[in-house]
Length: 136
Image (cartoon, rainbow, N blue to C red; front, side, top):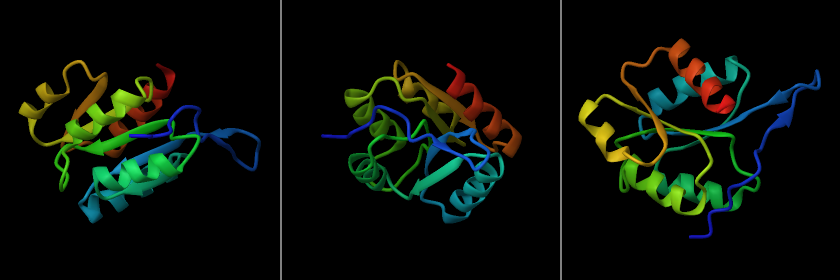
């Protein structure tokens, strides 16, 4: 598919520290904006997409790629699990966090090396899991 993901898009803040980059995928605009604000307030650089296709287009056009991807499971068109399968075919190392209110969806991600979070996911939980995925 030509997705170019490799080195991180980590940038430097004005104080010289590194700012990890997160790609956030959710078709629910309210959830997307809320999570963007939470992650930005926590010190992350955030890019967003409303569909798996938009996310793949972003990844194809952005080199280096994000440090972490946070995606909803239910998306228009390709689901979160389909997106992660495509991503894993070209980039096995990027951390992915999946958020879903459907507990049964977790089985769709077996072997795909994701962190699965159930909704509701508090802002503190999201921040903690993004930081944890960066350390792994």
